[in-house]
Amino acid sequence: MTSFDNEDTSAVKGVADQDEPKFSLAKVKAAAEGVNKTIIDILPPQLKEKVPPNAPVLQGLGAFLGLYLMIGYGAQFLCNFVGFLYPAYASVKAIESKEKDDDTKWLTYWVVYSAFSLVEFFADLLLFWVPFYWFFKCCFLVYCMVPTSWNGSITIYHKVIRPFVLKNQERIDKAIDDAAEVAGKFVREAEGVTRDAVAEGARAYAASSKSD
Image (cartoon, rainbow, N blue to C red):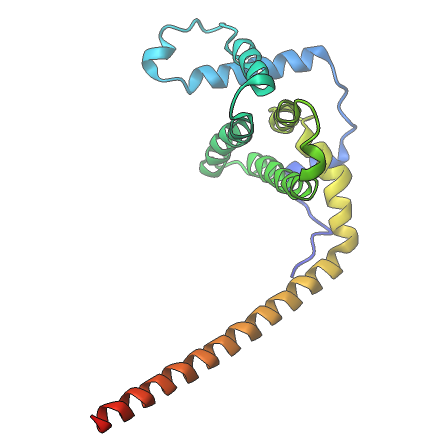
């Protein structure tokens, strides 16, 4: 396993070294306009022709999703779908582009998403009782994916995940190596048992054939 203590990826370093961006309504408006444009861009051509360039698609869609996540059926599926749809689309675009900064950005999102899913799995019994949980989760995921420098995935990664991993990296690497060794030993033992069973079956079949 290799250490990333001296990680020099430009996008990550730039975010880590810069001052914490201040939250402002102007930045929220700019982010909303960017997402709104992206939504219009991915609409089917027939539908896109009927939508004005500055139509408040995001606001209408957000209001509908918010209401549905509170009272609608299948809120869990819809929430997870939102958490995958735009990030997956943006990740494909990042992979196909020659720039590396967007790769780092969306890799950071998926790391945070995975960590959140792990916490959510173990806290499921408690989260079940939270009113409008899927609405709040959807808001959190949108905060993590919003295309700005102050989005939640970058903040959570640098303030929570990265310090934890760097602090415990040696123990994590050792645990992974030990698990791989145990798994390899188990596979080898299983292969030996399988070979013995096949050989025993072949001998038994050969002996029964001779007796016949």
